[in-house]
Image 1 (cartoon, rainbow, N blue to C red):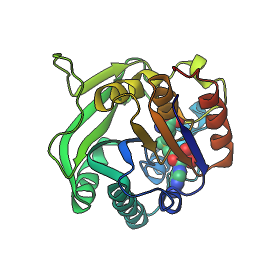
Image 2 (cartoon, rainbow, N blue to C red; image 1 turned 30 degrees about the vertical axis):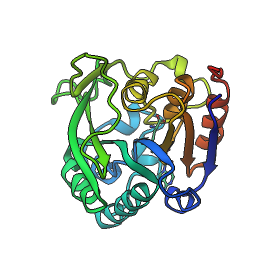
Image 3 (cartoon, rainbow, N blue to C red; image 1 turned 120 degrees about the vertical axis):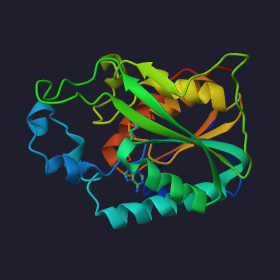
Length: 243
Ligand SMILES: C[S@@+](CC[C@H](N)C(=O)[O-])C[C@H]1O[C@@H](n2cnc3c(N)ncnc32)[C@H](O)[C@@H]1O
């Protein structure tokens, strides 16, 4: 039976409670820090989206503060990951280079920048520009050049395509940047094995936890916001145990 540990708090402080080398895989989707960038654009985004992420308060740090927080995140991640462990970090494409340098500084081995393509993106200002339908994900291993990679003889592209999160996955509460379960399950299945421990320090609505529990991996989730934390806890609790 999967062991689930959920914490409501700041991830850097909370990760200090976790043992060294105790995690096999980190899958996370930290703040992209695009709140200020988007607010300064003359878009009708706020009107189109009642829970716009730029208004959420966790996505609009000064660049230097955001960079420092990501630096701390990689340092703590390096401490808790096992040698040979893997990490997937979602990020806006324009921030990828910054994150790779910070991760390398903490001892991560950079492997891949992949793309998640949304088949049905929000059609924001579709008559004015190219509609944004992609996000990047970065793949690293820790202290080794390869980690668990369950491709089972298949060729796996650095590109994954899914629909945006279906409403059926939002019944525990709305989160402005909730990822689809199919996307997180893809990484859980390829980069870990049953009984491994998966950590998501920016858990949001708990999607990584749902994917981990469904595939019999232990899960540690951390979320700062009490409302999101409560919704995520309930959501993960209701995933049936596999064994
Ligand atoms: C991009 S969202 C993650 C969405 C998640 N992947 C999902 O599917 O719901 C980032 C989350 O990190 C949380 N957060 C921001 N700063 C944090 C911090 N210092 N510690 C823990 N959580 C934080 C935010 O409240 C937000 O829910």
